[in-house]
Amino acid sequence: MATEAAPEWLDKGDNAWQLAAATLVGLQSVPGLVILYGSIVKKKWAVNSAFMALYAFAATFVCWCLWAFRMSFGDRLLPFVGRPDLAALDQSFLTEQGFAGAYPAATLLFFQFVFAAITLILVAGSLLGRINFRAWMLFVPLWLTFSYTIGAFSLWSPNGFLFKAGVMDFAGGYVIHLSSGIAGFTAAYWVGPRTAKDREAFPPNNILLTLAGAGLLWMGWTGFNGGAPYAANIDASLAVVNTHFCTATSLLVWLCLDCFVFGRPSVIGAVQGMITGLVCITPAAGLVQGWAAMLMGVVSGSVPWCTMMVLHKRCQFLKRVDDTLAVLHTHGVAGSLGGILTGVLAEPRLSRLFFGDDPRYVGLVYALKDGRAAAGLRQVGMQLAGIAFVVALNVAVTSAVCLVVGLLVPLRLSEEQLAAGDDAIHGEDAYAVWGDGQMYEQSVHGDHLYPMMSNPMASKADEMI
Image (cartoon, rainbow, N blue to C red; front, top):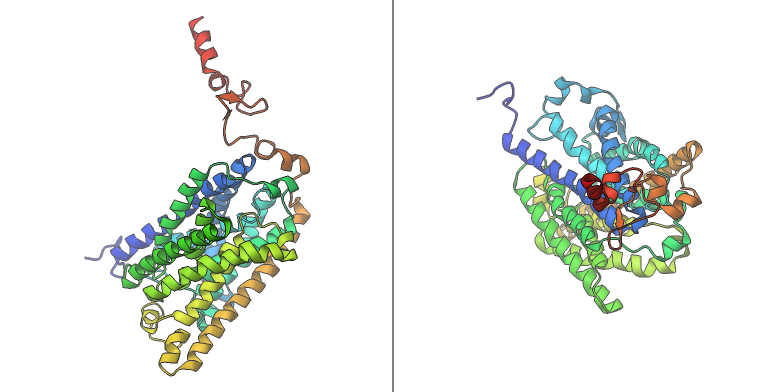
């Protein structure tokens, strides 16, 4: 029976799954990318890198509730952005049925927030090891407001002009991954490179923790793509299976290329291949068959490998821009590939499960088979148009945001801070001890701050005396 807490329009199963999916995506960021960023960088940048991710998660949530959610999914202000308001602070709005799904707007607000947050954290991956933390504090709300909301509204909102035009982006290949890849690369251009010493040698400080963070990222993608249909239905199940099929294939392809070209398997390489597989399948997860997901895994494990290992080293412009974690390749290139392949491989029946009974949504392969070549070519054209829009938007807005932030605070850390890293920026070290329990001479964990922790044997002797 319907109650005030469970009205007739509420589907408890769908609501439970959507909240669980949102939590899985949230765990990809905190602690997933916090751990991955903190461990994949040089030790002196571990605290700063992890903290950039944590800050972005918190700042995004506040901005999301205050104005960004409504700009992304609210009433139409312009063809590409919604009207900002404070409706998300009103319980009457949060407890009403949302714009999609059989559950309240509060569920949708939280679900879409974790996607916005991880996008900013992915952008941070291009800037690790030199951006001024205060500049990052300003960059996050500005970029969220003027870039992410426009992309989300245009491609995902029922009122967005690209959504209405028929661009297919199942779970964020364009809105999240292509955006973060282009924005990160653009911001890296304006911030400038790391020190020459860091660019020459930037070894991970803990590969085992890198694998732990990567594992959280992979498993969390179950909610990332599985939550996209806004319901616990068969399309969600298919999206989950396709996600892992493509990802596993991509990892193996990348691993084989590393072995063949470099003569040894690389753990970091395997993580990169995992990420490109996850990204590539995202715009297509619930729209393609299993064989197509595997094919996309082959493409995502090989093409980004080539752009990263071959093209990047031969192109002077790419070499000049210091994209710390190669986000342009793992997210920008892989997201573009996924979007194009969606336009080629989307199966009509599966497209109906997600988009409804609209004949426009058909992959080129099936359109040719059915004698509808024009429809298939149109869909590929729309996918390319979506890429062009996202690239242009993020180059322009990210450049503008960096220029504005640069007028307020320096974008780049000082040379002294770049040389010292975490201790100079935050006054904290990732690891309090060194060698056989020896303390750093300049560590903030020394006697003057933590006398009981710095030398427990001396403390024990003091107690006996």
